[in-house]
Image (cartoon, rainbow, N blue to C red; front, side, top):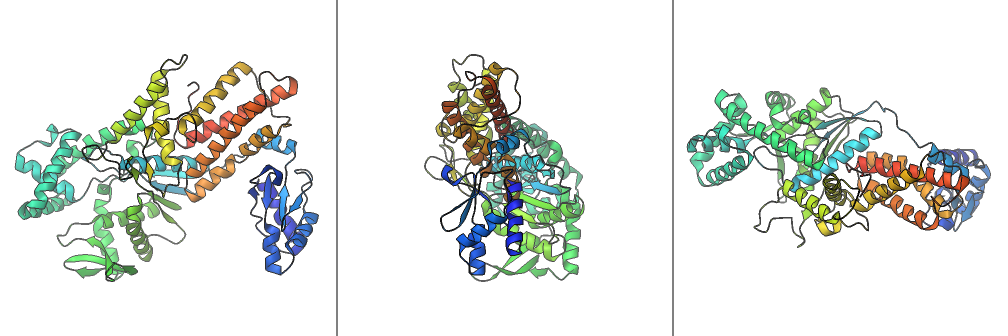
Amino acid sequence: MPVLSTRLSAAALAAFGTSYDPELRSSTKPEFGHYQSNLALRIGNALGQSPRDVAARLVASLQVEDLCQTPEIAGPGFINLTLLPETLAKAVNEPESFTSRGQRVVVDYSQPNVAKQMHVGHLRSTVIGDALCNVLEFAGYDVIRQNHVGDWGTQYGMMIEQLLEEGLAAESLDLEGLQQLYERSRKHFDADGTFADKSRLRVVALQSGDPGTRAMWRHMVDVSLDDFDKVYALLGSNLERTDVVGESAYNDDLPRVVAELEQQDLLTESDGAMCAFLPGFLGRDGDPLPVIVRKSDGGFGYSATDLAAVRHRVSTLHADRIVYVVDHRQALHFDMIFTLAGTAGWLPATVPAEHVSFGTVLGPNGKPFKTREGGTVKLVDLLESAVSRADALLAGREGVDRAATARAVGIGAVKYADLSSDRGNDYVFDLDRMVAMTGNTGPYLQYAHARLTRLLAKAGTTGELTELKDPAEQRLALLLTGFGATVEQVAETLQPHRLCTYLYDVASALSVFYEQCPVLSSEGATRASRIALCTATRKVLQDGLGLLGIEAPDAM
């Protein structure tokens, strides 16, 4: 609670002449009150004084009579604070709101490749990216989404050259056909040096604007983007066609990127390629690692494109913060790109660029998720399986729009499973566990929301929270006051699992509240107040699930 932190800092200033950060934390056990601070221990260690004596001086200077019960000193010098019921009630009735921060965040995520169907590997980037964008917007940031699709480079030279050799018209191929074309061209490229050379020259023709090459490439892009839109719609992603800024968008800027790096003496010729060798970046053999900006054949590598993207996002989009949601295998690449962009003056120290890395989706065998044949799992097949599993669970339920609810529950289950663990960890894709109605799952939270909706429909009108007599009421109310702080924490750390953990705690506290505090059968002020508490809880669950990109059905 911000006001308590402010009061503790003021007490430290009054007692010791310095305004410390109190590092106020929610207590882990009810007997420790609602909040706890170790400020006295830190001041005591710094000044060489007894922490309990320091705590006594802090408490003597602490003015919280209007907010808390009498502060308690526990153990070696912890300060425990218990909010007054009326303080809790007011905090629930007047939740924290966010205003515009006047800062712009550019978030790069999803990034599927043209001419290939989206697969399970694109799930995490899209789901995590959507959630982070939602949270950042809610927290008052101006967010610009960027879907940096792979629509440029060697593979398109290979595919176009294969089309020409086979005498096929690009317009005759759908996305499945394009993917098969890619697989044929890849084998051809690896086996035939002459074809590989032609493919590389075709890339140069593409980058140079050759009309026929560009026309075939444009068809590949359009077919792919149409398919991506369908997958995003099924996933419930906020990404739109206007958010697509692929590698090709930076093509005209690539010569300028190279020229400016050369002017600053940041490039070195190596085997015909133009490379940047940055201090501190070494391979396993101890040799310097290059950032290949222009290849020996005159084409540009994706490093040049990423550098152009950084420059564009800072100079044109006026980003105050840049976020890249890309799997952990790209950590070194982005470290080098950010370092080179900073050295070149394109990425000022005042604009943080953050690589939001994530682990791998695993199958039941603990290995990267594959089909039974060993191929890559298509994302649309994965999502449809989850919807089908959710639909089976809803069989026989009355008063439910089964198709819409199955979609909300199935997609929500997949998203929540992805977001609820630390994004840096791998996780096992287990549909049975994901769609379970108990435990820390999306359906459990969705059901808590639906149950509240049903209760409130029976309750009728609602007012404000006025009393909190039962410990279960107080526990739930206290958690509700932490929604704003949790959103703030996720916006700062870019770790959406913290919001999942918070919402699960709320739903768990709600379950205890149901058991111990009758709502509809209670009377008078108690009934009205409990209805208000249920209303506030429903809003937090609805808003929180929405930030995660998960629908909150009214009935399940």
